[in-house]
Image (cartoon, rainbow, N blue to C red; front, top):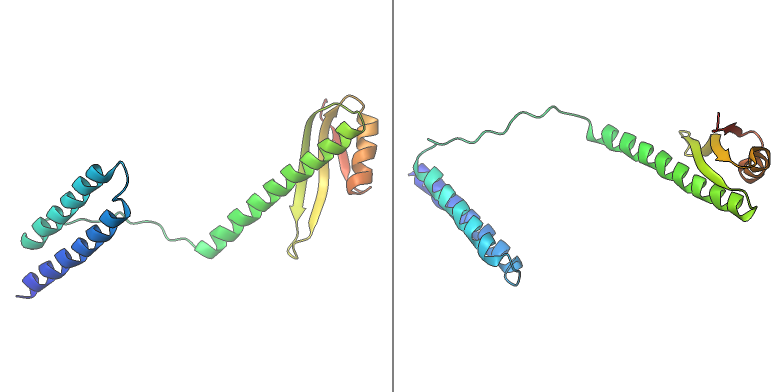
Length: 151
């Protein structure tokens, strides 16, 4: 009796889910394909319920990880990458405004624990390296290392 009760409850839950999904896709081009998939889902739940566990679905074991640490490291890496890209774009605009042709600019950005941004190194390939380096140092600080990327 308990098995029958569980089977009825599973069918009711799946049917309610199917109804909600059908209402969401009722006006789309994929209505008939979605209806077929949902009917197959209901059929598989019915069959699985009455075979008394004869069919078993097992998910593979996934290694555990610390989601908070992972997301923070991904966030930090993306923040550094995006900041470097933005700074490079601004420096390129400054160099173009000064009439210096720059074919390559790479910025190395470090973000400290207190979220301060420090631009430690800029690598450029420019027509006039000396003038470009001076403009970069005036823009972001005299202690920034500017490296000629042509060598």
